Amino acid sequence: MTAFLLRRIALIVPTLFFVSLLIFGLQQLLPGDPALALAGEERDPSVIAFLREKYHLDQPLPVRYALWLKGVAHGDLGESIRIKRPVSELIAEKLPVTGELAAFAIVIALSIGVPAGIVAAVKNNTPVDYGATIAALWGLSIPNFWLGILLILLFSVRLGWFPASGFVSPAESLRQNLMTLIMPAFVLGNAIAAVMMRHTRSAMLQVLDADYIRTARAKGLPQWRVVLKHALRNALVPVVTLGALEFGALLSGAVLTEQVFTIPGFGKLIVDAVFNHDYAVVQGVVLCTALAYIVLNLLADIAYVAINPRLRA
Image (cartoon, rainbow, N blue to C red):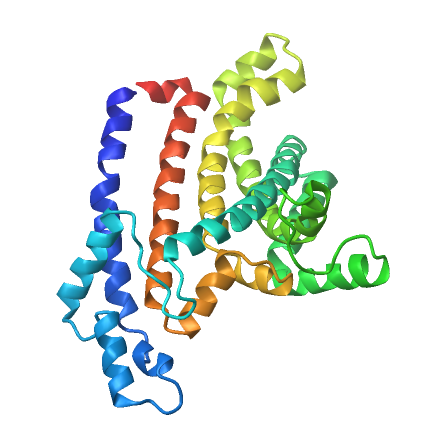
């Protein structure tokens, strides 16, 4: 187990290096010139030349990449050319917002999707199974932005139960923080719950047909113990994989949902950066997202071993 973890951790550095090459290379394909965007309407040649020199835009691509990579190695992700603030500060400000929203959404997805998948598998080919499948298809088919607008109209405009938009830090008011996150988290968790339900149902159906499940039932074990202790534990491996990938996707920024509910998270940050040709912010956000995916996959591998002891070999 220790050797396995060390091998996985050793792969993080070369993986991030190749990711950084990809990020920096693709970034240069974006149309537009940051210096022209910052120079204003007059576009004074002296101002443009100053901006190019200040942000190293006059240097060859390999030199610019080396300068950026050197800064990243020292924890300096550069400075936003639009906001004039360090990218690391912007990420530290926006990441907790999206992280809390993503965690809330995953909790909702797991609370709905996993139990629904278990019940659908146990009640296979019954009205309960068909109802769960229809609900899952509904969750997959409804666009997030449309569901978000409907929730705002119903629970904010008509009933007045929740605020329609905005975000309140938990340090200011925990109650208001939860009130602002309930609807956007449900919008995100609804779609993930549908996928979770389908994966859990499929995995449970395969496990419930296994020989050791028939042996457990032949021993007279209660149905709930057979399902929850023997079947579910072995069926959770694909669910853990899906959960890690979905959580990483949420951390990369739920753009539409954050825009609908006016949540100042990663999604809004990267959209604004792309539109304003803010290369440093785009590169910093994508690099942090890649690191999050790598760490989440590592945690998923550790969870596999904890869930299924047979994998320890």
